[in-house]
Structure formats: C-alpha cells, structure tokens
Image (tube, rainbow, N blue to C red; front, side, top):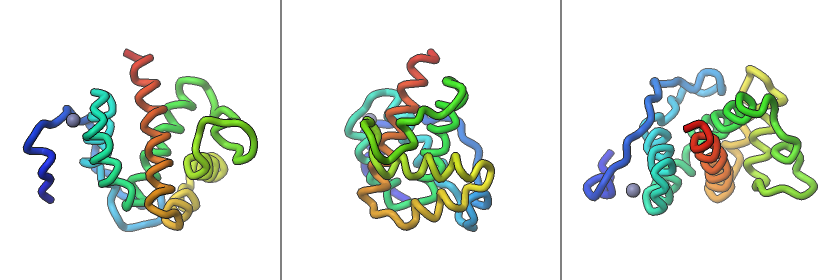
Length: 147
Ligand SMILES: [Zn+2]
C-alpha cells in the first residue's frame, strides 16, 4: 500500500509482532503496521500524522479493537484496574461512548474478545475513530509517565 505521507517524513514505529484476529473471532490480521505508525506519530505528538493514521484505522474494526484493548490493558497494568468512568455510559466522563462501550465489552468478556470485535464491527467509522482517539490519548499519557 502506498502512502504519499510517508514521502514527507516518518516516525519511529513501535515493535509489534504480527497478530492474528483469532482471539476476536475473525480470520483477518491486526494491521500492526498502521497501529505502530499511529502510536509512533502520537508519541512524537505529530498532529497531521495522527489524523492521517486515524483515517487509516477507523475503517478497520479489528485494529481499532486491538488499540482499545491495548489502552485498557495498559491502564489496568498501571492503575491496577479499570476506572469506573471508562466503563459506565451514564454519568460524567471525559471518554467517548464508543470507547467506553468497547472497554466494557472487553472487561466483561475477559479472555474472549469476540463481543468487543462485534461491537466495533457494528460501529460507524466516526464512532470507531472516537474510540481509537481516546485509546491513543490514554496510551500516550501513560507512556509519557513511564519515560
Ligand atoms: Zn508526522
């Protein structure tokens, strides 16, 4: 796949091994190249590249699901659990509905993430973008703390 943006500049991606979508009940593969590029651009705080990569990822339910899972697992690892405001759909929160819906599906399902993927599959591109955007913000926040 050619990407005209790559001609201008690139960001260091993050090491991510190839990953199948089997856990999520699909025979597609996670687009780790785009996921890695998105995290790399966000880590460098490059707005244009983040926007570009979110464009790339929003139509890919599996990769968005994996990204949200990554964020949830990171929060769980750092904070010892998932804060209630990342789960409840009612009440004050800074997180978007699509993000919370996916996190909650993932938490409810424990190791079986098919429901999470099914929810992402049913979302519009705009909803998946909101979920991906929230997940990125969280991941980058924790990465910055960790460095
Ligand atoms: Zn950039």
